[in-house]
Structure formats: structure tokens, C-alpha cells
Image (cartoon, rainbow, N blue to C red; front, side, top):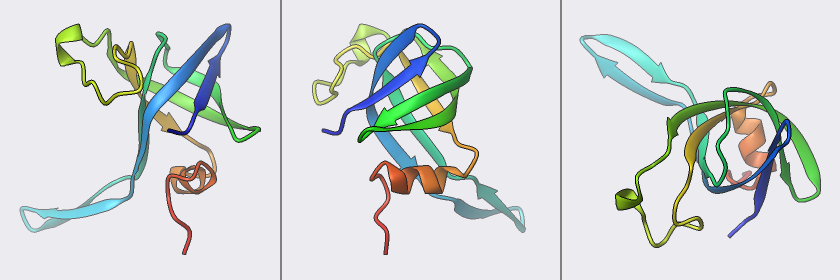
Length: 111
């Protein structure tokens, strides 16, 4: 599994289950909607909403972090997870676009 390190202030966290979800369109009530692309993952340390840097392959990427679940109960453990007890789930933003970040992190195959 790829190793991703996230630095936010004095906190250094390991990120697991990093995944990219591309833009997805859908129609509802005769109206076309688009869910924007996103990158999400799980952290082994408690993080806060705000700026951070993601390190991968000797490079640093300035990102923004949105925490959307904290203190996941141990009952929800998945033995396949890199961290058996993730502390929080995050969504990652990138000024150049999450699709570009996904390519740089190897989450999206370039054709």
C-alpha cells in the first residue's frame, strides 16, 4: 500500500484508504446535477478543517482538509484497513484541482 503523510501544524498523520472519486453526473426531477470530484481517506491522528501538506514520493502538495467524521467506533473496524482504528475521515482539496492531485498521487491512471 502507498504511504501518504499529512502534516497539519505540529500534527503528522499517516493517511490510509486514499481514494479518488471523479465528477459524476445524475438526473433528478428533470434537472441535471453534478457531484464534484473528490479525494478522501482515513487518518491515524485527529485533524482539523484547514490547510495542510500531503507528502508522497518525495513531493509536498499544499492541500486543504475537511474532516467529516471523527472518532470512528471500534465496532466499525475493517481488518483490511491499513489502520485498524482510524481516528477521522477526511476529504482533501487542492487548488489545481483534485483530478490533477489524483494523477500526481497515482490514484488516477493517465491515458
